[in-house]
Length: 227
Image (cartoon, rainbow, N blue to C red; front, side):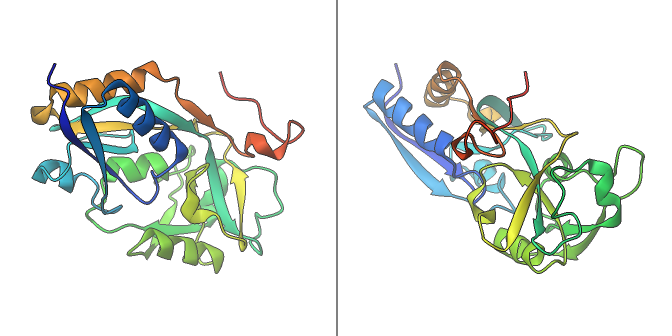
């Protein structure tokens, strides 16, 4: 009942991953009378379209600390990887720890980017309390990737994020960060039958596990999923 019409779902340049396509297909199969309409939103101000009512649901990383927003089910779980230039001092390592970043510089996002989300993606301090220097102001995610490729910064991201798939960088698993979930977010006061139906569809799907190296790299290289 009430699951008809259209449902506007936002995504960012970092959350347009296979799990989103799988969710769309599953929802349309369950609710053929409700058309899911996808909208790309500003990576650096992802919650604004929810608050303005331009979208109904956002697919983004589930590190939400906003009193007016609700975090729903995850649709995928992504390993954490450090992206560095191929010439970087860490590039020959097989993995890294957060403590290794105390000697590095990382990007400083625009003020519009949710602080809790960025802290979850890239911690401001190492476990011993040493600061991780956020010194390079950036204006886009592509600019972040360019700074990394030129050796000016390093960056922690989620395995499988397409914008960092380039030949001049390399990826290093981060041993002491747990996988980050990607899932549904909506404005609490705008909850509806259609949003509930989408969340129910997401819960019925086992979250995709995105590992690094990817499973397609062969069983000899693929890492075991964390339990």
